[in-house]
Image (tube, rainbow, N blue to C red; front, side, top):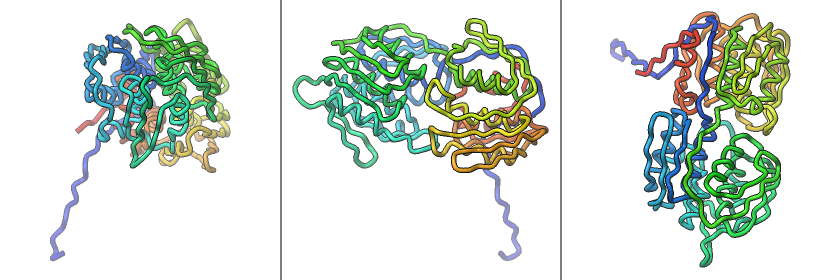
Length: 432
């Protein structure tokens, strides 16, 4: 190289600088549920009237969904934590690839578009790379309702044949209780001709939240929250004023942050029964929980190892598997964590090992031997929940951690470092 030294400039990446070993205290406010808000925004397309949705979380995924709706001709008006949606001028049946591909929830537009315009063309969904997450069940459900559906070149095209331009009620049995498929069929069926039943339906709180909003718009949905949902189709829906439920996954994440830092912390608002499986595992770990209405106060004791397996609701939620594993890395004894929902949801294991965790990975099962302490390290989140897990681990680590992957984190947690800092954490965001 002719004796000339070359200098490679390090590319800056946004990151959190997290100093560990600080206690938390006080109360953390829980935002509206991300996975509910996104679906409710698409449900607003089912009427020409104004829909006001309150308690909307400030997330990049919500911004992405708003951009998609505007692109379809929808009028949006955002104020603080609410958004007003009016789809009286809904006009585009095709979602642009660049807006829709990275946001899995964009696929929820297919039911409302099909119902309102008779046709829809949606790119196959992206989002976090945690598994295949196919839309086979969604498509089967739409076909059962009478839609013609084809998948070509990475796009799903659906249309209603015949002169009536209405879907037809049907009896649908899912092979697995898919949340997305249940919500897709629910939105498609509310304006269908006749009665639809969904058996082996997902029972998650987000499905219940959607059904409640649809009913407030004039739909006739019963059984949501159980394995069988019945939908009596109506001719039209009206506008409504609806408030998104609290985010159970965010609530669980902050409870785990309290447990790993040995901190007494209060979280509110929360619907405790939405977290029953998680709360029981926290008790099994050695934490004391005080529950009063929409408030949970956690007081950790000595953390003991536990075994857990992710399952559909009301089982242990897959979205809290990674954050809970962070806690188990410093628990006394051995823990076994088995992931049954998504095949690629162990991306956090290597990063926890970088911090000193003792974890053996066997397929989708992790065996964790608790260690006395973790050490700060340069780490990276590979998806939304694994990045949250690294935040939790860093809070308890000796030293300072540099966490990259904020694009994942900001999809599902509204100002997470601000909330934690207010409770006593020491986190700096370096954006540029």
